[in-house]
Length: 308
Image (cartoon, rainbow, N blue to C red; front, side, top):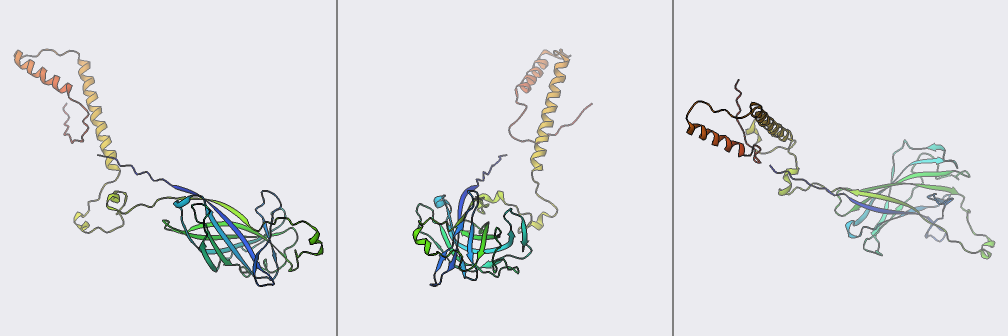
């Protein structure tokens, strides 16, 4: 009996998600809004203007080369909107409502800098995704609007879409908030961050193959096999067959060791009545049995009868 081991190796990939919010300007074009950070550990908060059309720009990249190939961003959902104060205390929430799907305007692969090809998607960003008016009113000073952004990415050689979820924070201000005044021409221009990032670890497990050489990995317990009615009540055994075999081998080894111990306890052989030739023949036969291996590598069925 041969034991075949199948080693399944998991693939691990690091995916970097970049989220950018764009608002429509008076010229009719969409431009990225500012993402302000209060500290190094702060993921950032987007500064939005009230009553302006918005959309999301999502970019996903990895460093796994050709091992992971993106196809497109299939779905984007927004849900679990909540308002928190400066200390992180929950003030209001709409977690009981279902997530709303955003319309994917475009999804394409970007020209890669290395071997891997990032995927980029543009989606709508509706303000009526909740019964609460979080996004349709000015956010009180010090508070934040946090929502859960969930995306589904389709990849080659992956049977299911890859779900990625992260929290994104916002602050809604008036339309004139952040407009540069006449003093802006005398102040130096500072670089402004326009995106927030999320890092994800993806673990992919190879699926079981269905070829002829891999039939031993499959189970037909719930599948009809043609002609199985001929077997009637007979059912194939599982791992218990190997356990019974090991128990049977252990019982034989124990019986052999017991017989050896009995022979050693009796001491030397005593010559019984009979001719010298019969005694020598019996002695040679016993020596032959002693030289034979007691543990055979091949399984065998023995008929053992006890005598008292």
